[in-house]
Length: 75
Image (cartoon, rainbow, N blue to C red; front, side, top):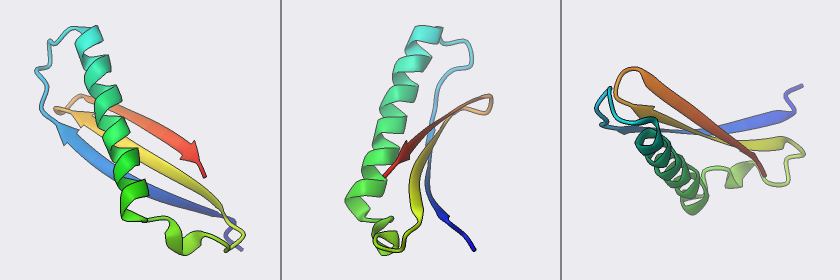
């Protein structure tokens, strides 16, 4: 019936709204890396291994109120 499992981690990081795009990109990359790393280190997806489901890890990064990015990895 359900052939996919999505494991999600949400991260928030303060960032001034008028920060340069390059600074925001670096902060996004760092925050998204931390989110994916946490999912893997904590074993959040382990219970789905061997289930036959396609497993996806999703990290969401929020920089303040207006800037959001996502990274999706297939396991």
